[in-house]
Structures are given as C-alpha cells and as structure tokens.
Amino acid sequence: MKRQKSGLYRANISLPDKTRVYLSGKTIAELNQKKAEIKNNLMQGTYADDKGVTLRSWANKWLELYKTNKSYSTYHGYSNIIKNHLEPILDIRLKELKKSDIQLCINKQEGHYDIQRRIKLTLNQILEAAIEDGLLYRNVCKSVHVPVKRAEKRRALTQAERRVIPTLDLTPKERAFVYLLWYTGMRPEEVRALTINDIDFVRSEITVNKAAAFEIEIGRAGQQECRDRYR
Image (tube, rainbow, N blue to C red; front, side, top):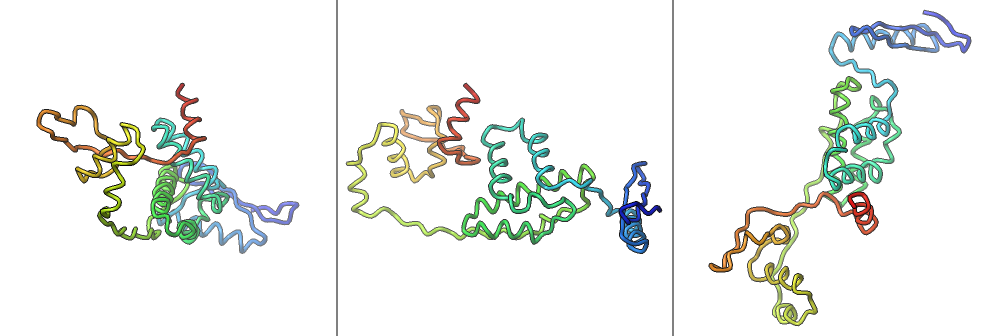
C-alpha cells in the first residue's frame, strides 16, 4: 500500500486467474474497505471486473461479435435499438448500470409496445454476454417490467366500405392482396407469405402454413442502403 504524489493511496489484489485489480482511495480506511468488498465478493462468487467498460463500448462490441452474421434486417433492428433508444444510458459503466436506468428507457416509449419489448430483449442479450465474459455477475435487465400490449378492438367492414373496395384504383397485385384479406379472413402477414405452391386452383383451396415477419421498418434511406449493400 503506497501513497502517490496525487495524495491517493494505491494497492492491488491478485485474483484467482492471476490477474491483478488495482485500487485507489483517499484514505487507508477507504482503500481497505474496497479490498474487503472485493474479497467478500470473491468468496461469494459475485465478483466481476468490468474493466471500466461502458455499456456503449460493450454494446457495439456485442453487435459486431454476435449479430454481423445475422440477416440485414436483424442486425439493423438491434443497431437501431442501441443507437436510438439506449442513448441516455450508453455512457454508464456496466457495473454501475441499474434496473431503474433500463426501466426509464422503456417507460419513455410508453404506448410503443414493440419498441419496449425490443429494448428489453436487446439489453438482456447484451448483459448476458457480459456475464459470460466475466464483466458482470448479474443481469439487472431480467426483472425489468415491460407493459403488456392492450388488445386492439376490431370491427367488420361497414356496408359502405364494402361497396367502395371494388371501385378502388389498385394494381392487380394490390387487388389480389385486398381480396384475399376480404374473402378469406387471412391475416396480412399470412397473405404476404403465400407462394404459388400454396394455392390449388383446381380445388379453389389455399394452404396457410406460414407468416411473413419483419424485424424492422428501415424506411426509404434504409432500403436504399440495403440495395447498395447487396447490389
């Protein structure tokens, strides 16, 4: 234990994996308390050293390590959540991140249930990966509350709406989509997923065995970026 020119006392502790943790404190008592906390955590198996890594740094590393081999939409879905919805907490150190920090991010998206769900999903994966790398010992995201989406009230088309549909200026593809919804009762994602092999023109039957899922809506700029990337 040595006192530096800065006036701080410094010491180090050797960990079971032979690495060393360097500590500093304004007083010997403060330094001893830090050493005692680390030793206690080691005995309880709850010690982890985040090495000063922030959520921003680790989230970006996680994205590149585990999501670059996913589909374009999946990768950018996670990237969008990190850049656009986690910004208020990205500069917090991993070990200092609290459940309340995450809950505030989710609460800010009140009414946007899918975004709230994706925030928790993304952060949960990021923090679990940090635990596996020894940067954390517990995941504070697990017990974060995500509101349940309220059931939307649905209604049948009115007679006036039914009369208007045949008069709409639609392309053959658009008309086929609308009429399939109208006459079969299929969901939009089920219609989008249909292939020619799902339609039996002889028996006038449609086989519904899948649904189209979209990770994110990337917008026109994202669509152009996607075309450029895979051109």
